[in-house]
Image 1 (tube, rainbow, N blue to C red):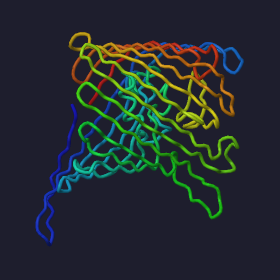
Image 2: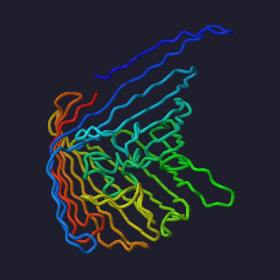
Image 3: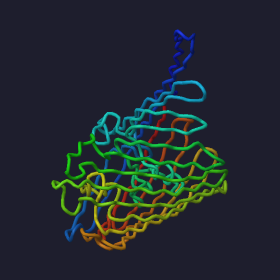
Image 4: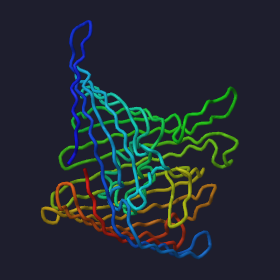
Length: 373
């Protein structure tokens, strides 16, 4: 049960007496299960085969706990904050590089008339607006998530972000954010020196009205110019735009998305024991077109079936000459609600030409239990 702590403060001042109400909520998700995974094929010309059977951590939703709060400042204005920690059920360790509040750490102001302004570490607009409409899996369900095909929507998080989102106007909402350094503390720029910070900005427009939802987003990350960085990674502007939509026919909900990434990938590319990138991949000249189709359908009152296909099609390998092989992902999922807060799920995914590596294939099947509080 969601726990809320409501505190009413009586403040007496020279001008009179004011009443301020603050609410703080503890919330979270705990998700674990069992899965089998296999990666087999060729990696950079060498044969590879790896299998893993064991605990599945965050199979449907990444496990987390957090605190969020609001304070009524009067005239429809609120002070708001969110502190959210991600962790692994399998090990109990913090995710997001061991950060205490790696999923989100923001403070801001919110108004029904003027929108919301937040400061701190948070996800980009593509993950907020595009991911939920482009795929039935959104940013969830492990390898089935939309971020496997669209790097900009793979729960991309930026440090040092200022983000503004408008109120909802007849179903429309606009958002824009700017990060002064996307990973780690902001560095001083010395006079006449190179730009030491990796800057990022994100923007998008979404429309949600009845059965129809649509989103258009754009993300850009400019790598730093430090001479200590690899020459091919300096001052590279990674760009990504994405367009997605969904329509709920009641008996089935259909999802579709298209996008393009240039000069790199806005998240790591991971497979088996390999990982490319350090939060992003700068690859000047790289161009990838991404596509996805999906659907979800209720089965009775408590269960749902989800399915999707996604393809990331590299048109240019860039300076690192990535193989010009289309990555294709096929995914199937099922959820059954045991209560309002607890459900079981099953998932399966098959990916061909993983990370654009010719004949490298990934298979994942698993079942799990998710509890929300």
